[in-house]
Image 1 (cartoon, rainbow, N blue to C red):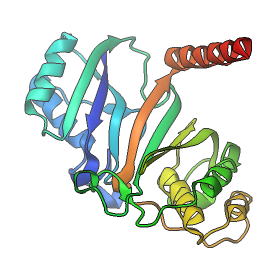
Image 2 (cartoon, helix red, strand yellow):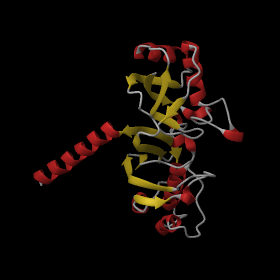
Image 3 (cartoon, helix red, strand yellow):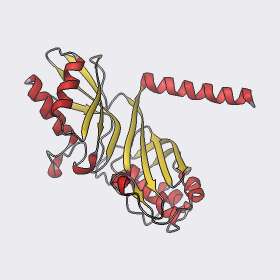
Image 4 (cartoon, rainbow, N blue to C red):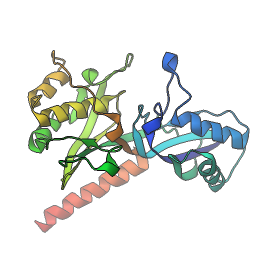
Amino acid sequence: MYNYKLQIQYDGGRYDGWQRMGKDSSSNTIEAKIKEIISKMTGEDIDIYVGCRTEKGVHALAQTANFKLNDKYQPVEIKNYLNRYLPRDIAVNRVEAVDERFHSQLNAREKTYVYRLDMANVADVFTRKYAYHTFDVPDIAAMRTAAQYYVGSHDFKAFTTARKSKSTVRNVKSVDIEVTGDKCEIRITADDFLHNMARYMIGMLLDVGSGLKKTADIEAALEGRDVVMSLPAESYGLFLESVLYKIEYSFIRKLSQLKTLYSICII
């Protein structure tokens, strides 16, 4: 069989997430739209595997997916056909033929979400659908301190709505909060995310920034102590920024090490 890897960008605002299964199943998903077009093109009933399942209303800057076909197609054929018939809020930026063993979900090594905040006194009309307006400027220093409690391997059972999961332990590589003027981005990188985990993590950080929570509340939640959790952050401000695989992951880590070494040499 022929295996094809997609890099996809989408506005998740009007969709029920990447995929909805079980009693809450829905055909209004990103996966369903793509499957429909590929089946129309090839006449084959396919399965699509995805790097990270985004929830309802969440966007993607660079989602990764793959599917297999019995017949061979040129990647540019698939890319052009998809972009011709998909809704305008879904775009396929790249298609490539890959090894038959490649699996978007099982081979993923690292995933990054970014949450966008608008901290201006008056909300920006043109970003209101893609950035959460805080009304008041949050305490960024307190949020940065609290964010460090997330880093490392922890049990995130309190930070998910998943009903069933083999393990709720996840390894968070970094949480960075960057401020540029009245805009702020909270970037979280982990080996994997539980259902709604990123939104609960950010919800707690926002409440720390507003004074509704203390930094110690995050530590207590991770330790399994009794804590009233914050509501998950609004989905429209959340973007899946990247899904990295073995080769990409190794390259970026080496590049980061080289930058660190360069900085030491300069000092």
